[in-house]
Amino acid sequence: MKTFFACLLLMLCCLSQILPAQELPQNSREEIDRLLTSIARKEVALRGIVKIDSVATERNELILFANINCSYIPFREENVEMIYNEVRALLPSEFAKYKLQIRTDNRLIEELIPSSFRYKKSNKKEKTFVNKADVPLVTRLSAPYAPQNGLQNRHIALWQSHGYYYEAKLTRWEWQRARIFQTVEDLYTQSYVLPYLVPMLENAGANVLLPRERDTQLHEIIIDNDTCLNRSLYAESTGGKRWQTGDTSGFAHLREQYIDFENPFREGTYRFAETIRKGEESFAEWIPDIPQAGRYAVYISYKTVDRSTDDAIYTVHHKGG
Image (cartoon, rainbow, N blue to C red; front, side, top):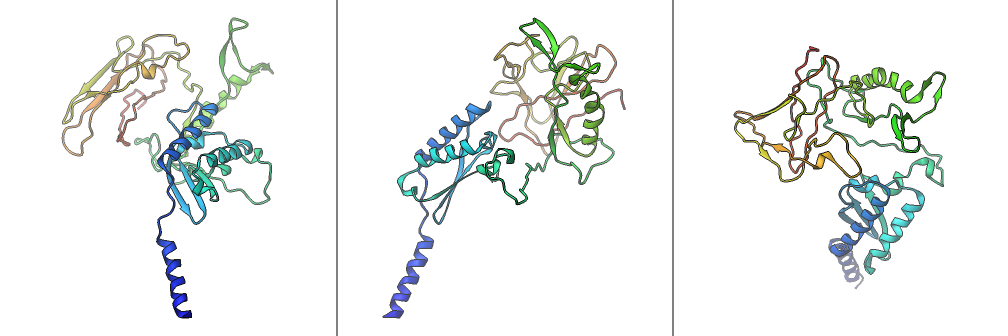
């Protein structure tokens, strides 16, 4: 008899391991999506939505994996607790006793609270992390060297300082910082960040992104399939696959000045051609009408769509070599 009960107990244990785990209903997932999206949009200018990509259950633990948009929320002790409470309130009753985890960007959301905003300080060395990129935004194919370590495949957001802005109360343009010791921070910091610090980081392999304009050239040339300034020219050469106009919006330069909610990246069209492995390639040319010799930064705007190529090649012809 003891042997029978032992076998029965073993069978029940095995059965509990193979029974399907509780599944989170689709309507609950959609409610959580809407909740997290509304929270994110109160904090950041979010494009797209926060979405629960997948759900896992481990014993008495429910793990929700949110997409990368969730990581853009500035997490603090208060809103993390609020998020957990409101998500729990949306869960079906069968998950009432489950321990809940919400993860985004491979981290628990509570791990994304900056240490300076945490109430409980830990004596342990905190783990740091970065978003690794196997393919950088831009690769300089003509560079005489390719860093193997250093800052290769790293992307750095860097501000060289504040800048010139329009002060409506005084009806004038002015620097954001005060004048001190015959200079102003908006110019002084920039004087060594642009010619020294940024090139140093780029030479070490990094892609440096500056929200404030880094190019000191006074002239601007815009070349686009919708509009070109002066005698600049946009041209296409069709090979094995023809060029087509995309179904959604693209860039167009329609005015000299822009006001609130006017976005040139949504006022035009974009062109695309299917990539090929063999045969005659299709390519586009942007030929500028340069008004004066000098140093010009080159910027590229492109439309990202499903199955976009990740290895588009741009060749820049210039007098610098």
